[in-house]
Length: 574
Image (cartoon, rainbow, N blue to C red):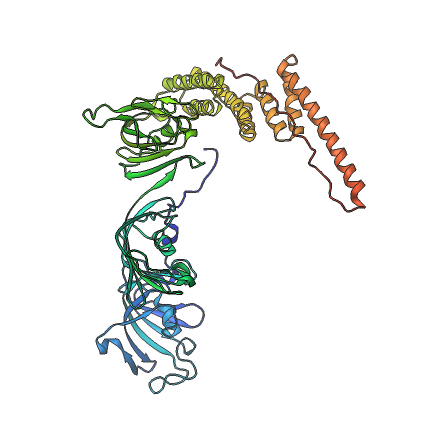
C-alpha cells in the first residue's frame, strides 16, 4: 500500500463511546482517591458492565451515612425506600455528584468525603457537626439516562427504553415516529401514531429533528423542550387537531423512533439519490465490471412507467447488465454498485445522469428531454468481476492486457475518467509479481509501464496534474530512461508552475531522444512559459517598487494563465 490510513470510527458511534475513567478499574477492597480534593472511594462490590451515569441522569441509590466514629446519621435502607436525584445538578453534596458518576449499575462502594465536598464549616445541625468528614456506604441501583442533546439546556432527553444497534438517522433520512406533545400542565397539543418525515425538513417543532438524530431504532424517550426548540416567544395557534401553544412554553414530548429509511447521495453533486426501502444481505456489493440482475420499474415524474422488468407474470424476466460498461444510464450504473444482494431501493436521478437533453424512446414510453427519472429496483443477484487474488499468474497478465486495451478504446473515445479506471485496474492485477517467472516478470513490467504512462495521459487530460506527476515518477522508478515518462512529468510540472523541475525533465528527455518532435515542441512551450513568467516577475517587482511610496497595492488581475501543453499519444504496444 502506498498511503497509510486510520481505521474510521463507525458513523454515529463517536458520541456513544464514552470510555470509563481510570477509577472504574478497581478491585474489591481497593481504595482510590477521586479528583484532587480528598474524596476517596473503596470498592465493596463490583457492578455490571462498564457504563456509568452522566451529569443530568436520574439515579436511584441506597445509602447509609456515618461520621468517622461510626455514628449513623441517615439511611435510605432504614427507611426501606431508595433515594432518587438528578446527578450533577447540585441536588446533593458535591462529594456525591463526583463519586456516584464513577459507579456502575449494581456497584457498592464506601465514599470518604472531606468537609469541603460535604457540609463544610457550618455542618448540618443537629446530626452533622462543623468540618465533619463523612462516610457513605452507597449502592447504585439504577439510573435513567438524561442527555442535554444540544449542550445548551434547550432539549433534555430521558431514555425510557433503549433502542437497537448503534446507528442513528442522518439529515437526508426519512424517519417514522410516534409522539405525544404536552404542555407542562399535561394538556395534549399534538399526537401521532405514525408521522413520517425527512430529518432535515423536520416535523411539528425543531426538537423532533434534533432528538431523532441521537436515537436508535425502537428507542423511546421523554423530551423536555425549552421554547427555543419549540415555538419560542410567538407560540402557536390551534389548527386542525393540534392545540394552541402559549408563548415561551416548555413542552414535554413522548417520542418513539419506530424505523427509518436511509437516504444517501450516490454522487457528490447530489443529483442521484438512493432511498433504501429494504436492507440487503451481508456486506458484499457489485464491483465495476460485475454482471447484475435486477427487478426494476422506471417512472417519469407524472407516474408514467417507461420500463418494467421482473414483475408481473414473468418474475424471471430480470433486467441484466454489466456495470461500468455504459449499458445503462449513468445514475443507475452508479447506484447499483452501492447495493447489497436483496436490497430494495428507490432512486431519483437528475437528467445529467439519466437521458440528458435528448428524447429517448424506452420500452413502454418516451422519456422527454431533461427529465428527472425514478426507479424502484431490487438487486436480485450479482457476479463480481474477478479480482487479482482470484487469478493465477498467467490469468493476471492476460486480464491486465485486456483492461489495458479497454482503456485504450475509451481514451480514443475521449472518455478519460473511465479509461483511467481501466488502466488502474490493469496495473492492480500485476502489482504483486514476486511469484511470477522471469519471463512473466518482463511481461508484467512492460504492462505496468504502459498502463501507468497511459493513466498519466488520462490525468493530464483531466487536469489532475499531481496524480500525473506521481504516475510518471513510478514509471521512472521502473525505467529511469523512459522518455515519455520524463516528458509527461514535465507537462505536469509546467501546469503546477514548477518550471525548474519541468526544465530538468525536458532536457533529460532530449538527451535520451534528441529527435523526438513532441519533446522538442514541449521544450519550446516551456521556454515561452519561462520567458512569460520572467516578464511577469519583472513587471510585478517594477510595479511594487514604483507604487511603494504611494502605499497602493499592486494589481495582478492582468496575469494571463499559461496555455496547457498537450500530452503525447497513449502507448498501445505493450
